[in-house]
Length: 281
Image (cartoon, rainbow, N blue to C red; front, top):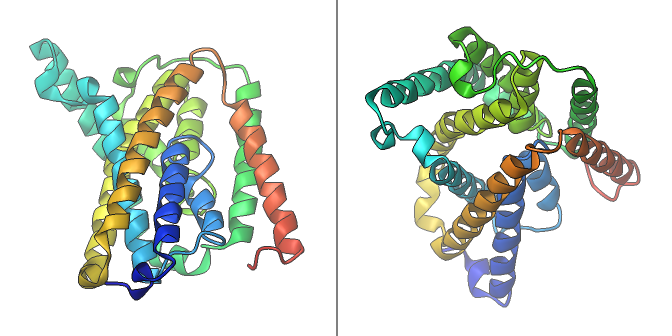
């Protein structure tokens, strides 16, 4: 067990894991970059060790994935389909999702360690937030031609291209959600279809990444305090569930420009913090 969790900082650790769980749950599926927010939050919300921090980030991501599965259960479970035709369509949906996963697996294996070593920095996050925000606003100001009203309308070619675009999100601060939504919008998807495919693709993409990270973290399992991990998991799951529901309601009447403005403001604040040495690069 990690010694710091038995000291007077014990209650502080519980507060920190709860706050980080809230940040992950709220930001994971909004196009504002959960990784970017977590990197920044961890400048002030220090966890006991690097091993604990790495495992904690995996656990709260798994909680967010579970929230997607629960929210979209009827659309994602073939056995819950009301008709044989609907069942076949659900299996076809999963095929498209796995096609979208292929680029992330290949590029992740080739570049993942390099990115983690060199790009997990506040200045990179700031730049990615601003650029992504500008792109969101620019794309939303263009006139949309919604050729794909639902995920069922997507072709396998569409799924593969969006899968490649998703890989841009390996740069911290870009946002996997923003990359997939932007890619889908550019290719003619409706906002609802773009958001839903982003959620569905997150299940396999984040699931594969989390499984790989768990294997790497396995040697440290015996040194980890599991209580705070469970708290982070529960908080992240509940907040992610609420965040998904919020986004699906929000896009019925609004576009994504608000998230673009938020990204730009946050990115500029981080730039100033880096320049003034408030945040160390």
